[in-house]
Image (cartoon, helix red, strand yellow):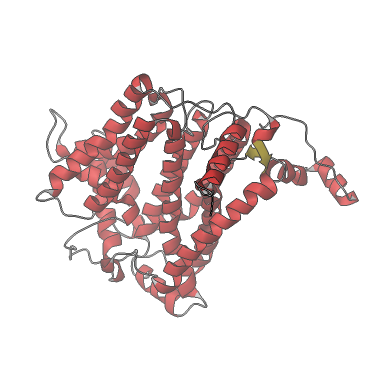
Length: 429
């Protein structure tokens, strides 16, 4: 799909001059105008563009907020309040940035689940998937660092609890913790380091996103049927076909986002984080932001020792293992069929997996007591079983449904079915 001679033709003298020296117009034309995409892409494929849009929004609002933020334990909380109350449109910048982080994760989790459902990790897109997983880790690191910056109660104690888990790692754990904290406890050096890294990592993410898009353009876009492009009739130009769909998807996403920004600006935050950090007053229940809750539940699910591995180290290993498991997905799924549309058993297990992750998120907000503990453990078990057992086994034993011969055939068949559903089944008298 990415091969072929460029069709770009400079029309003005300036375009010809620039095309010889730095062909940016040609790059835009070939990558975003005439770039061929499968004709059956649905709205689930708009989240890649939405993520790029949200990344730009986060960087733009973050730069302005950084101009007014005081990276000092005595100034941080008050500087955030000053931004909201005294800076021109500071309330809007703060709301866009804080809620933008949540909607950034809504988009990325949807993007990941779409990839798992349609098999976007399968050959030849393994490296594309791995780069995407690196983007997720960079996002999570940036979000965690940013959560500490308001220097509220939950910010302080969240940083204390999470960095303390590094001490469970043998030999180097305490060194990693002290490197992050800048000392032996969460304090001013910690805030300075977190602020510097939080400001830097988004630009690293931009570079990795560019690499992700480049890899996508090399191997081509996957599609809901999971069938390779076989002829020119299977594809359409990116503009206007995919562009219009992306704009529509982004508009719907922004409407919901704007509702939270203007009407529920603090809904996704924790009430304790609107109180200044107090090292001598521990909150009743320490929880991270909602987008970390499934992993937080898996971290706390290990309440028992496993041989020489104590529960604390076991929880850390499970936490990192849950994220790193995504990197090896392309080599765990052995099925030759990409899309879950044609894999009935995989589709059932997939939706159970999606429900399991949501359930883990809910459990992550609950205390480690009562029936929540076995629920966390069973849900964590299925999370790993889906990748380690379900994917490899179904790849060998599942009998997929018959695949269409081409994307065009699948589209025409779908349209024909829709047309038949709209016709009366008997003559109208």
